[in-house]
Length: 46
Ligand SMILES: [Zn+2]
Picture 1 (spheres, rainbow, N blue to C red):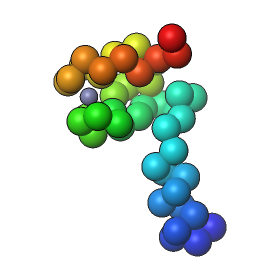
Picture 2: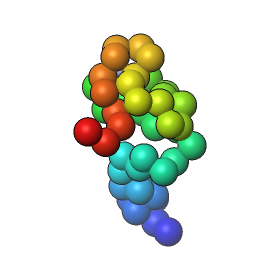
Picture 3: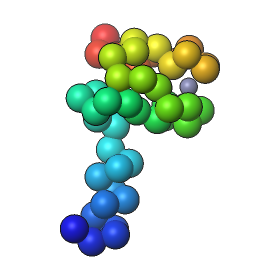
C-alpha cells in the first residue's frame, strides 16, 4: 500500500473501526459512541 493509499484509507470514516476521529473537531471518538464526547456531533447511523 502506498503512502497515498494509506492516507486515503485512514481518512475514511469507518463505523466498524475501533475508534474514529470526529469529522467536525478531530476528537478521537471511541468505537460504538453515538456522539462525539467533545463536541456532541452525532456519529452513528440515523
Ligand atoms: Zn467532535
